[in-house]
Length: 193
Ligand SMILES: [Zn+2]
Picture (tube, rainbow, N blue to C red):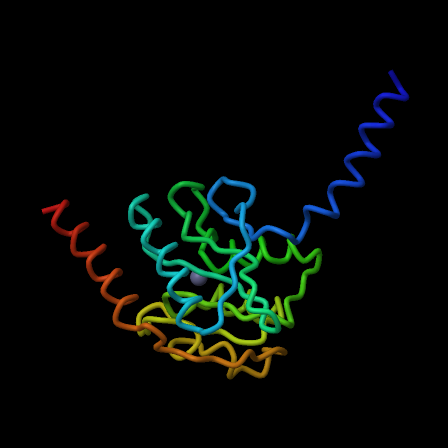
């Protein structure tokens, strides 16, 4: 019995490194996606983030989606959408979830060779998480004058206490990202009328 257990463990140790890092992580309860996706242009990565945002809306979550792409290869490492309501977790923002998944996949708490795409300007929490993860670039869609923390509010990356400032590109696919949010909140208002 002990030998059998030992063999199982050996097989596990052999298989784990082979599967790790091969499949993109999808943060929605599924462990991994069964195919690797590559993005050549920022618009392609944002389209994946928009797909995630749509899934969030369908699940009754604020429609924000995020993707992390390895910049040297264009490989999508992870994608996620807001899961605050489902998880009863106020920090389960798309960016936090996608950072966790990509770090797990890379086996590192830093993602220096990676870019993050998100459909909405990151809030102060996520802007800080992005800095901690040492992400190279942030591309975001809709501007968020009320809750954003990058180009509005506390402007996290302009603070002396911020030790890693990613390159920021706002307004990518802005209209599509903003429309999704507007429609979501409009339908919520209509439902509560
Ligand atoms: Zn956030």
